Length: 178
Image (cartoon, rainbow, N blue to C red):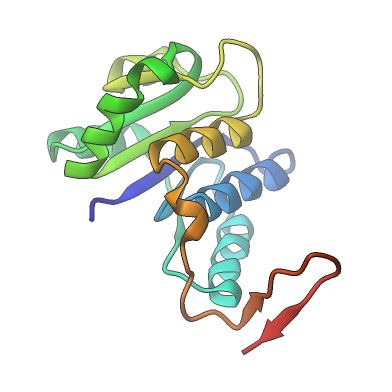
């Protein structure tokens, strides 16, 4: 099955630890295979996201890239799809069928930004996609995008190999330590 990898642009140490971690958690929970963080190098955020996979299971991983432009160009040179989530793009509901066909046949890199995204990002992307044309969070945009891409199937994904698992309850909390 082709991979879905999230590229988080513009991470800033001292400002974005929480939001970048949440982008990684949403990527993992909603079916992506990996997150690559660009911007300031922050090994603590990468380690934090990787620890979640160790504790809760699955093969999701986090890493850092120093040169995101080269990474995106490499993806394109290897015939992989590049999707940029931006409120200025085409509406998700207009392009989702094409994106599902793309994802079924080739790896997909999903770019989310934080601070102002360089114009080059729009030019490099195969698809500039808007979850909405209103200001919103990259975490929300990513979660909605992945849910639409996978048509809800990601909600049933089982993350094998973890040390912890939640047992769904109508009330209260039940966590099993394996």
